[in-house]
Image (tube, rainbow, N blue to C red; front, side, top):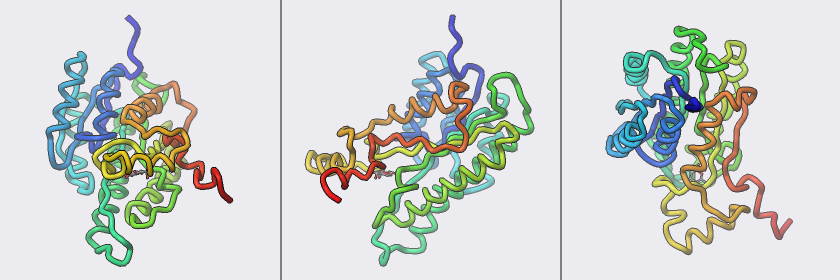
Length: 267
Ligand code: BGC
C-alpha cells in the first residue's frame, strides 16, 4: 500500500472547530497525520473533525486552549507530545474578527483581535519550535518541522472598518518572514497561506444572500467564492515534502482577489 503523504507525522491545528481550521484538520488527517484539533470555546465542530479522521482510520484528539494564553498553549503542546510523541506540523490558524469603524473601535476590540490573531500565532510557533528542537530529526520529513501561518489577503489589501484585523494579518506576514529567516538554518520551514473570501462563518454576511454574493464576486476575477477545501488542500501540500523548497512564502489562495479587479474596466 502506498504511504500517505503525512504518515507518521503529527499536526497541531489551532481554531479547528469550524471553517478553514476544521477543514485543514480533516485534510491533514486524511493525508495520514495524527491531528491535534484545537478549539477555544465550542468543542462541537472539533469533535466532528476528530470523528471524521478516526472513521477514516486516522488518529486525532480534541484539545481546548485559548491560543492567546501562554500556559494554555504550552499545555496543549504537552498533551500533543504525550499522545503522539512529538509535533511535526503547526497550522497556526485560530483567528477572528471584531469589526468596527475606526473611530468607534474600542481598545478591547483592538487588543482581542491582536491577541488571538498575532500573539496566538507567536505563542504557538514558539512552543512548536521548542518541540521540533527537543525532538531532533526523525526521518519523517526533510524538515525538522513545518509552520503554516493562516494569513489573509488582508496582509496585503488594506481593509477599512477592519483595522485591527488587517493590522494583525500584516503582522503575521512579517512575523512569518522573520521566523523563516531565523529558523531556516535549523531546517524549520515557515510559510503562510493567505485565503481570500472563503465561505465560512467568519464572513457569512458577505455571501449568504445572492445580492451579497454578487457584490463579493466583483472582487474575485475567477468568479467563484472559495470553499474550505481550497485551503485544506494547499495546507496539506505545504506541510508535505512536496513543497520542501518553499520557505518564507505567502501562498495566496484567493481566486485572484489580490489582482486589483477594480482596474478590470477602469484606470
Ligand atoms: C476575512 C473575510 C473576508 C476575506 C476577503 C478574510 O481574511 O476573514 O471576512 O471575506 O478576508 O476579504
